[in-house]
Image (cartoon, rainbow, N blue to C red; front, side, top):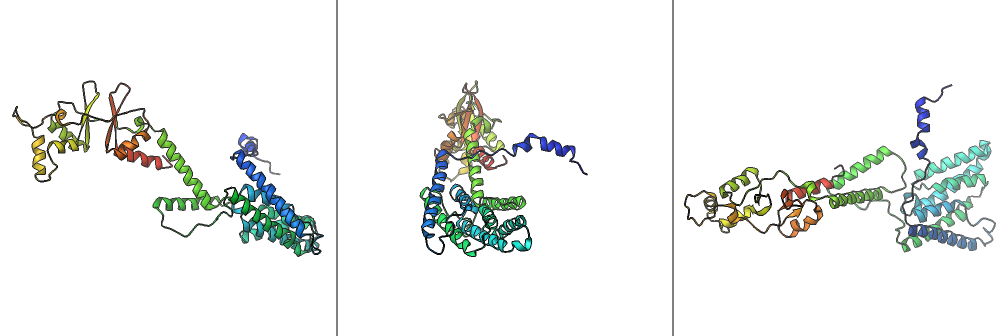
Length: 392
């Protein structure tokens, strides 16, 4: 006799194993709960009422007008209207085909010699038929079992009350769900193929690979699952951006100049560091201005392309003439009106500055107004790319 191993007993006694018996929280509000309850009431009442009057005919008056598994179908139709197992074909096809399987099981019971075996075989066969016909519907298993345990032998029972019950319930579901803004039937197939982005194609491939490896029945369509994933990614993207501050992404390796820095030296720094702007700071490291490529072009009067190179070289060339009218120092051509931002400011607040006001560089200051960093359009694009990456 093989006894369970110590690891097996430990797994059985672990908190994680017992936690599997706890029900998950239903993530819907009270309004949706009321919608589901009212829908089930409406659907079963309408179905029962119409079937009762239909059943008053001499042909079917001896048959019941409602079947018990319909209650389970109502739960799916009104509580899970988007689920693959709740759609009209699974409700109608799953229940009706399972009823026929169960009736066939009653006729073959004498061959099996055991009602328990006949019941089990009917349920298993009904599941196999529903899978093959793409109409898997949990109440279908109960329908097949009810036929066997009730000894129902008439094939007409699958038409009335089963088929009629299911048709009326589906019609009630279509009317009620759409009236309460729940699409039903809920499309389970993708629309005609359209050009998609590389990112979307990768998501499709990854999702298909994960579903293939998971290899279990899910009561949510592939497209709905994809939509949930995309929405979750967008929410995460928005959360990352709204929580990010300037201090989180600013460049701290600063290159600065002073008011009296020669233009030639400033120009050399711009070319050497391959940057487009230099903050101009005073002795306390507070912002006095900013000098950009645009400032050099304006000072060199480069609005006319003719003589572009000569004009620029003449501007930055050091001259010994004390009385030259040409600007020599950074402070003479810098932009003095500088837009700055606090390092604690949220990044999303800077987006309008970059997007609509023409700013390409924003100095970041601390609480004492001292320069501590710089944010450029390149920094912003980089952080947007990282925020969009789910692994980031």
